[in-house]
Image 1 (cartoon, rainbow, N blue to C red):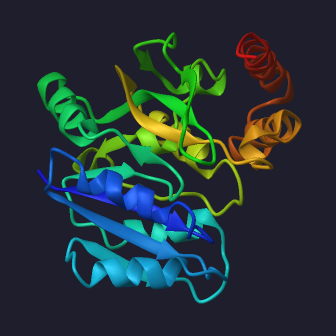
Image 2: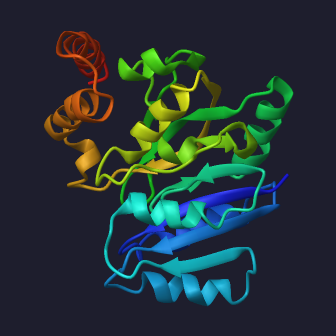
Length: 249
């Protein structure tokens, strides 16, 4: 079973080797790493290009102009040849059994969309003793995701490729992974959680994903402009989202 690992990279020279080393440590070795550099101004492209010379599982391309993570991910997705799709952001990393355990879980339970709990690390890669999604439901449907009953970390997700006709990130600057998840769940699929911490998510100061006000405004925009949900139902979903955001503080 081949896994296509999707990574967008932009000015990631500090972290990209850690991400790659976590792939080298995987107990499941049948994978390809599809990296798209988003016109980095540092040595990101050079670093990946050098390691690609000695590891044929790496496929590297670059955007013609800086276009954002969604376009970079989609360019990598267009080159995928695996039976499964996994996502790994350039500043995150996996525990060594991540691919093996997730594949086993998905095949034994006939799961098409799987995510895991994850732990947080700081810029230096040190564990912060904070775990995410330990208490979320075992399975999540479309309505659950609109209410944000689970936090599905992008670098934890694995998809069975043949189960979905269309896997593509929407062309928006932030929240593209969340919008992809709800679009997949909207088909009637469920996201099933493997209750094990297999991913390390790096907290970078100043990240949009850590700004609660921007996240709230983005969430409202997704309800109204992308999902085109009516005003009062959007208020209901947003109230659920806000309540859970407060509980997670």
